[in-house]
Amino acid sequence: MSTLSERETRDAAPHRIGLWHAGVVVSTKTESPTGRSIVLDVPGWGGNIAGQHADLRLTAADGYQAVRSYSIASVSNGDRVELAVDRLPTGEVSPYLVDELRPGDQLELRGPLGGWFVWTPSLPDAVQLIGGGSGIVPLMAMIRSHTASGSDAPFRLLYSVRSPDDAFFRSELDTPTPGLDVTWLYTRVAPEGWGRPPGRITVDDLAGSAFAASLSPAVFVCGPTGFVESVATALVALGHDPHKVKTERFGGA
Amino acid sequence: MGEHVDGNSLAGPLSELFAVDLTMASARCLGCGDVSELARAMVYPDPTGYVVRCSRCDDVLMVVVQEPDSVCIELRGMAWLKVPR
Image 1: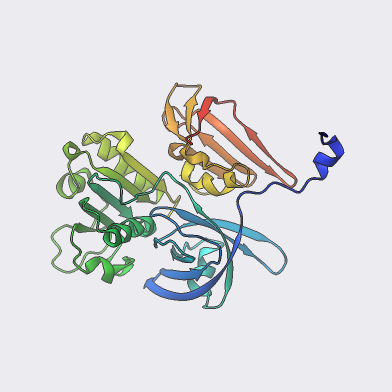
Image 2 (image 1 turned 60 degrees about the horizontal axis):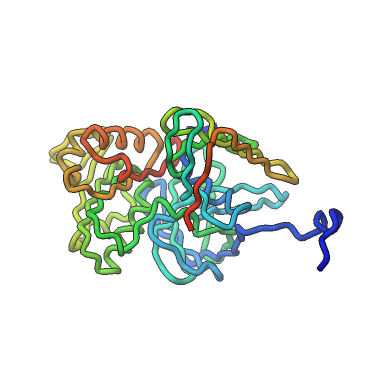
């Protein structure tokens, strides 16, 4: 038996668990005036569960690299990954993804990432999903996983968007789905004749449309940081167990 | 820089260093004694890395500083970190 000398140890290959995979854009679809979904083929990806995200790495011609995290809208056992991205006006990466990326383009992805903000069909609890803006993306993966698995867990979604045009996955969410109840909340512009005046989500919205705390639902909240924090505070005020409220913050919006 | 995010965002950066998903690990805050998954912590990204704060008392749990040839992880705000297996 021999031991490594210090010199040999220092010359060893760097230890890297988080592998980057090369992905190819298969298709893109406009979801809203500022957002689109992107389907990628990522050999070696190996599938993901609902709620996980991927890190995306872009490398400029001069070698400059930028890494950003995006939630995954799809659930699969294979190498197909659907992301959905909203363009941040001051963003460095999202304008490229929303306005310029084309089928055949290559991107580097790392993941699937995150084992906490996830839903799997084995969970029996009622599920309350609450999304703001592009915070719908990981919740959409949960809805798709719920539908694909035939889970009996009742699902409800509260989806807060600026205006009807800003909704991602509109036609899919407007298609009646057994076991899924969808409530739309509009913050700036509501459809004509809509009962609720436009405005940010309130305790009354949660009390009126979300599963009651007495049912002990598993709650997933995703969106801009301010949205997530006001919703989480309101949920706790309504008696929800903080341990059953899982949150994911996107930062500013 | 933008607003803070949360510990979910650490899954990628920490996957460069650890074989397990540390966002599912629970940490005990030395400041207030709260025990929470790292995913629940508040994360303040800056150009050199991340400052991770307790979601209850806001004390610093962990600082990650990325340098060209190393990553420094300061853990002085945690009594322990429990990793599920």
